Length: 446
Image (cartoon, rainbow, N blue to C red):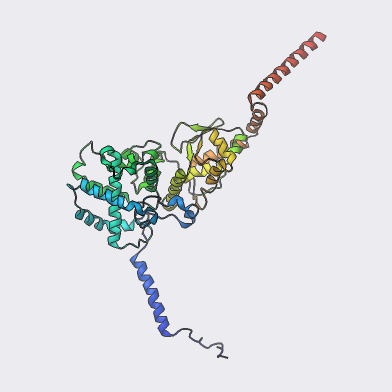
């Protein structure tokens, strides 16, 4: 039996000095690696994010590019490898288009100069070395600029060799890929390359700006018809990347943004079925701006919303951006929260589809309901905008009003069909006739 330490004796060493020194060196190496890849200092310097793992795991496909990877996060994704040759082809075409303004050497030199700033925009450590990183940013940025150019001018820009980009399935999927949060380049990189590549044309009024090309390419998402610089000026914002731009498409001007409280209050809203049972009428709004919800005199108007996998992916990425960069200004999350309160079962979907509020692109009502049921899973909400809080309060008050419930029950029991309406009118008429006859009989007897 080995010696047992007694009180006051030093414990027997469990490791020799050589092992301890080796462990010290390992820890120092860890610290050096941390110093080499420091975390961003502030949100102002860092705005390129990966989706938080607990949100990503709910629906991996919604956050993963399907045909084309952009930037370092999904670089080397085997799913998108076949598009790499087309990206290089577009890169080559872009260089030929701007050969009188800037050459390849100057372009590489410029991106290399920007590399520390660009790398610092990404919230996660990028394992690519400097040359690899520069090549990824250069090729992807020039591909996007050439793509936007061709889509703007159309026609002669597309050759037979790569006209397959115009096929609807590919162009639609690629457009959504360019909006994924993890598939972004800083917008200032695109802007700086564009300005250098077309320096001599910048003062030509007929020459489109990069902002015009970008708004044109993503026009199908610009439901409120915001216009370029005017749209951005009224918000006092600078585009960070394409996901950020499409989020801004849905926001009203800065002076019309609803106030947001400092604290989170406990809120609840009844489902569409429950509200309809209390007499609320749902209507599709004529406005396409998602935030234009209007409640008055028993009617709730909501802009039409299409439920399909494409829209699910778009809004999941917009909410993921808000989780990372706009946690106290989560206006997109506010809207999705209302829709998720309204929808619990397929019956709720049926009511909203019948009223034109929802277009169900998933087929079954239960499938659409399931989408809403996990839309907000693992999403953290820190506050709500005041206009929605008032809407919650007004709708809940409407539901709790016994008069509304009584009137809804009368309509349901006696006026739900054409024949019930006729029967109810006839019954009322007969009752009135009976009352009149009774009055005359009483008068005659007197």
